[in-house]
Image (cartoon, rainbow, N blue to C red):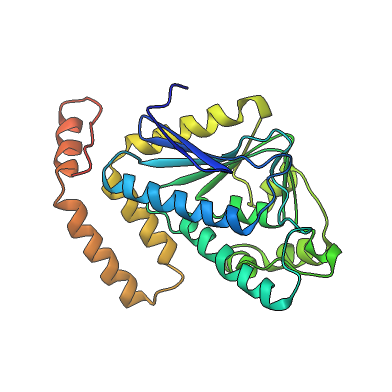
Length: 267
């Protein structure tokens, strides 16, 4: 892929091509998390959010530059040694992951190799997860006498079967793509060698759609469980006005009449 723009940090880098940003986690050998990594994730998605506003980015693929792992979780050897440090890590980890979860444009996780603990949680911050056939998932924190924090229980408890979630978190059991798909942690499984191309093609499809409407859909669905009906409908009405007053709606209608593909311009 010939990148039109590149953003580099020490352990995270991003290539942007045709309004699709591919973000790579690159801390060999296992992409373990540190305070610095959390800071880089947060900074990267803040920068990308600004590029969404400039219509330079319309979709993101989150993946790994390390063949063996998407991320095997926290760097236990260099991680917190006291409860105060663990609580502090919670705070900065949640801040970084929230930047991914609440990113205004669609995010696709492309996962292969190990996705353990926080690595699995990072993948699940995306709107859609595609994994390779070599992916392995699990919450292994219980084996260290700990549990998966960083907001994990909130995200999983709100969105997935509690029986499945309790089992995998308490047992520490590891599982593959088939089980992950059955539990709806993963939405698509592809051969490992096709993973990145598949994710980027899907991101390109998202990027071709009207970006104002796409952002409205994501905002409404992300907030659906946190708002009562009246607040949700008020938000829906607000976003309806913004969408219907856009030039993209006129373009979509005209393209349909002219039997051609619409060209949306984010305005």
